[in-house]
Image (tube, rainbow, N blue to C red):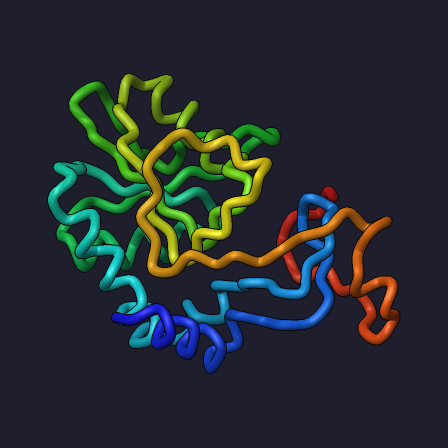
Length: 192
């Protein structure tokens, strides 16, 4: 599937937004990718994620792990398309961890799944949680790769689309200077 087709599906599902946004990092941006909007439509999500499934098919992964919330449905869909077990991590006492009876061990080659990768912080929390049990994390799969300069990931990233959306410190944001659009915070993280 071509990049333009993926962007078109993201826009028609309401997942790719243009405006004036406050990101979870506190920076401002003229674009935002809210993949939960895409994931409302299983047929569209399956279509977009099929190109990711093709990229990861030969990695020898034994499990796909999605950090809650954003990566859970992505993990499920990639697991469905590749026939690989899908699990997820979640926060308890502000620490990302395996729960609900999910397990990994030294025999596992795990791929982490995310909706959007920006800074890599939640991904790296999940890497630490999985590696604590001896699992080998082999990469990250996502719908949208919009890694920023602050990205802490050292793993390979397999994405449906690479988005180059510029972000700005609030004090130098050109959208703030224009004053035409109020800044909104569409993300899920409470802390900025």
